[in-house]
Amino acid sequence: MRTLARIFTVAALLTAATTCMAQTRWQQWRAAQSAAQLPPGITILRDVHYGDGARETFDVYAPPNAHGVPVIFMAHGGGWRRGDKAARGVVQDKVAHWVPRGVIVVSVDYPMLPDAPPLQQARAVALALAAAQRDATQWGGDARKFVLMGHSAGAHLIALISAEPDLATSQGALPWLGTVALDSAAYNIATIMQAPHLRLYDEAFGSDPAAWAAVSPIAQLQTGIAPFLAVCSSRRTDSCGQAQAFAEKARGFGARVEVLPEDLSHGEINATLGEPSAYTSAVDGFLASLDPVLAARVR
Image (cartoon, rainbow, N blue to C red; front, side, top):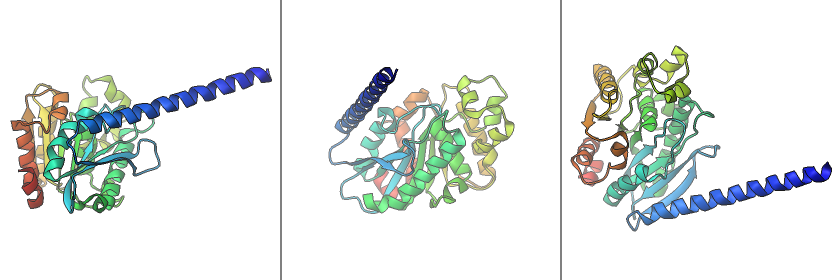
């Protein structure tokens, strides 16, 4: 029996080692592929830790000779359960468009379901924001010229942080210039959960109305917020309606909130931002309105 146990132990160790080597090779390949598709001269810092968790890291894409430049801080989507800060649709066109113009792009990972519910994810993203602002000067960035951006689930998280800034400021984050939410349909969680909805929302938000309110940007919105652009897909039945309702409430507190409907799919709103288009120009116009230094770089 002892011999058999040793055999199983050795086999398990070999399997773990093989898996680790495969993951390392995949990470190396992914980094090489991403770097190969980006414009030359960009400085890339990968897997900068902002917390102790394996997914509590971000990547930094910085222009050469950067000094005091604005920063776009990007949170990926994936239904609160999956996603990757280095995915092509998350960074490729955004980095290719903004970094050569003199803007740093930071792309953040965060813990996923089932280990971390959305409120914990939002706190992780907020912690990453504080860490990125703290270290921004090391990459030539300006801690006071950050713009929050996110797609899908990531858009929900940055909208929640924007509606409830204490999630970030309590962890040391400084105020940011504005927020760009790319096609979130999760501004009002109670509305979603009380109507027919996708299973992914049950997995993310459960059945407790008090918990729904805690992660609902429209419920947490109780005062003015930084300028906010809600991009929404006009091809979806719920995205623009949720964005408009959030915008109306925020405007009641004197906030500047714009809703930008786009005839693009949910994925295209993320993946094509940065390509030459009226859509990219509209987002650049919003960014330019936030700060003169940012305006000089995106125009």
